Length: 308
Ligand SMILES: [Zn+2]
Image 1 (cartoon, rainbow, N blue to C red):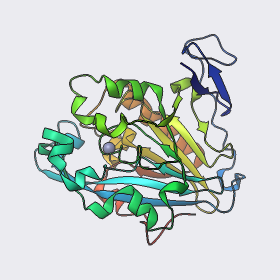
Image 2: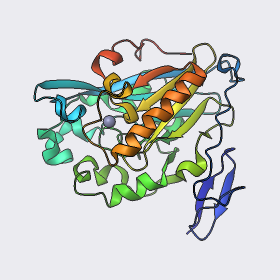
Image 3: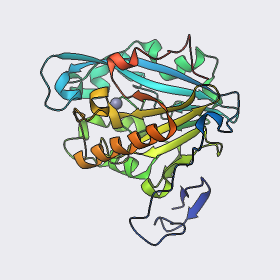
């Protein structure tokens, strides 16, 4: 099997054995390459890049399922996903829930809806929402996955010309999750025929730069799931935007007042928040948390508005 990996400069590294190719280091705990954003507002990104913030409805749940051990009261959270228009191609990040959730949620998600009840209209699916801002399914070049939980896997296999990028550790875990995470992975969403997958290698490929221009970087942030990643988007006018995704569900999680209700490692989850804080401080990024209902209200929403 031929594995495609990327080094820290985003250069492709081919490896026939399946073992990870490292560049320039022999230590297992190789230092993470520094994130080079000297002056993010002057980063040489193309002037024609837009970030659209969408959601596939909401999940009705309880506080304790979002903020660990914190209350039985009802809590309704948005299910965000993102589209980036870039001169080198359109990029979908996550895609929210799959369209099947809007048609028959119990058939598609099973008993998990008793804890996380999705409120989604068929028109909320990511393919139709792309059309609402003029992007045809055929014109999406990359589907990039933060992780493969069920509220993030709605774009996989829905864009016929797209390469799908995910952390290899997340992809492998999704097929064989531990018992406490199993309900969060819907195999029908990601185990689909004919997909073009590219796998990233955790710390070894950290800060992977999708187009080589600093516009879209992938930050390895495990803890919520084993292969979770966040995104640092650098826009020509807005500057840096840090999409924590589920490395920080809410501002409470961002502020170290709560852990998310579902984690694979509390230690990694806490370290990933610290890592993102450092990036936010270094770059002055606008921080977008994963599922905070109040925080989410403060951002410009597609299709009517976007960030450029
Ligand atoms: Zn999520």
